[in-house]
Image 1 (cartoon, rainbow, N blue to C red):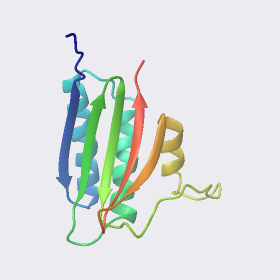
Image 2 (image 1 turned 90 degrees about the vertical axis):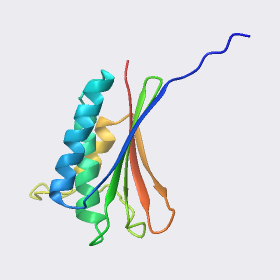
Image 3 (image 1 turned 90 degrees about the horizontal axis):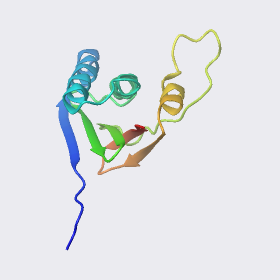
Length: 133
């Protein structure tokens, strides 16, 4: 019997829901992607945006967020889980003068696909996938 087995690589780490934790998420993701021999672009930007959103919009004092990376075949899945399941993200077009509010638009533009998965309460996971050629 000839069976092919897929190699699934994963990395997961809890981080403090602070700007420092968001920065550390990006740095750790880059190091893991290098170890796996995967390109940093656009994954580095996706991790930065998702982690910044978790820290800014999904923060509950005293609770961490979690960064998870999976590679299955040619697809990298980036997941950021926070403890504000009651606040679902939704992209909006900000005014041209706005200094923020474009994060999810960048996620949508840079990823193959993205979305939100609920729970378990009180959590939600915002994820983005990138397919490498």
